[in-house]
Length: 262
Image (tube, rainbow, N blue to C red):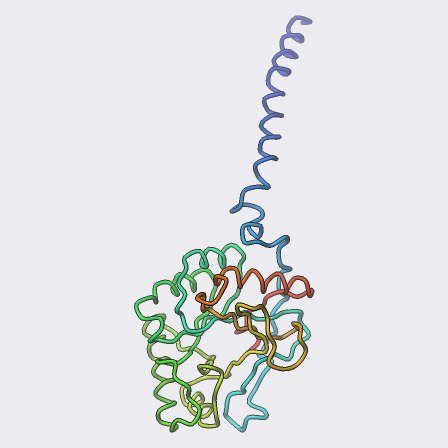
């Protein structure tokens, strides 16, 4: 019996160091796995963003103030939730690593697409949509709408509604006018095309960092942020997004889904 006990004890001692080594090795490797427990480190963030709160049960904006039946024009959402919203225009940038970034960070981004800019690149935005991005309207040809006849503005907006429906099986609810310029005819044309909100921005991220056309020179809950996709003048779209996310976290905010609030 004593010999058996010694033998079993010896077997246990011969196995345990190996098991312990395996556990230690796993502990050493796991925190450095960029696609594992800490994907935020892969994208230049020191810590993950807080999870967004439960979205409101109904949109926080309506037609009040814009005339009966007309969509509101918004650059900021009236909410006490500590969220801001990330938006991207045109569709010129089609970096597959940006798809990875949206997927791994679970970013609820909104893409305002222009048909003449996207061209044959709709497949890229289908992939973005499959990982959580939403697709909205930014006209057919990216022309400044202000001052154009109602019929011309309607053709630009409704035409892109039809294009996006044929590509993705949906008709967007949100519309961003190119360059942020619009007039009363724009809002009426958007209403004709089934748009429920005309979306501008209160902050934008470009080569020089965040800028604010009006209001506080800091992010506040409900801000709509436009991330400039033009990489010819500075950092990549991924780096610009990382810079926004760092500022969002520094100010105790997180990223929400715009479509949950409008």
